Image 1 (cartoon, one colour):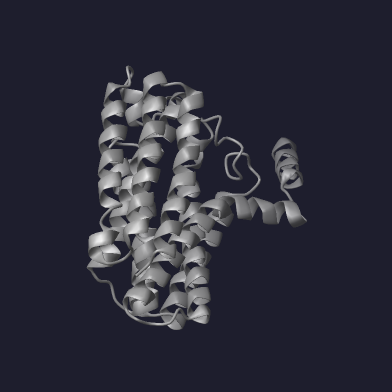
Image 2: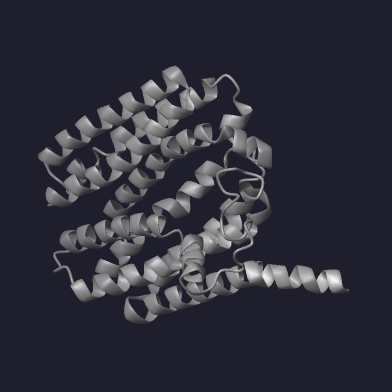
Amino acid sequence: MSDVVLQVQELVASRPTGWARAAAFAELAKLRIVGLVAIVTAVGFCLGASQAGLPVDGTLLFHTLLGAGLVGAAANTLNQYLEQDYDALMKRTQDRPLPAGRLTGVEAVMFGATLAVLGTGYLAVQVNPLCSALAGITLLSYVLVYTPMKRRTPLCVYIGAVPGALPPLIGWSAGTGAIDRNAWVLFAILFLWQLPHFAAIAWQYREDYARAGFPMLSVLDSDGQRTNMHVVTHTVALVAVTLLPLPAGLSGAAYAVGAMVLGSAFLASGVLFLSRKTTAWARFHVLASVVYLPLLLGLMMIDAK
């Protein structure tokens, strides 16, 4: 009995307190990813308002970003709760708050559930029910569909790309109260962008994914040929879709030229990664992808019709 008491005391003593504890919860929320979600949500909001001939309401935008951010943080937290045993097997994730023991599973569930209720409720009250419903769909599809599918099939990337592409629709619905066909152009861009982006991440950490038993394409594709096809075909499709804002009336010719230049550079980055298939070049392609998307969306905003 004394040994059990001693182990419990050691566990309690090892728990972070004060700012360290707050930092652990912030790590669960993945604030950098929440920041990216905020950017694409804001783009959807502003473009939607512009297309509808409405002024950009700064107060409404603030409410939208706050609510969407809470829901995004909830999704990240609950995802880590469900994957904590697998995270403990991977070098990249073994120091996260749950596998490292800095927070408990109960704390993570309570934190994630509270954020989810607050975020969706806040959007329903301060923005509109459609925006709240889209945020709820994003959360549920990410946590209850994508997360378990990661352990079953490499096709999970297509499933995971759906909630990843919904934030601009959340913003659009917040700014206009509805969703039209132009909003789906933004959805398609975000959906396709994620596929080469995550393919490079999966290649970079393929040994970690194999160790944890995730059947990612990079794990099953030892010679990289299927990864080649995946990255090239989806990047070409992405470049084609990024030109749709011109005929759709979202942006003008200057955006289209910029989109072609950025798309060609992004494709070249993918070809360099695939020609070498090293961890370093996979990391470079990931970096290229996170530079490419904000620049593309920025051009779209600058040249918005």
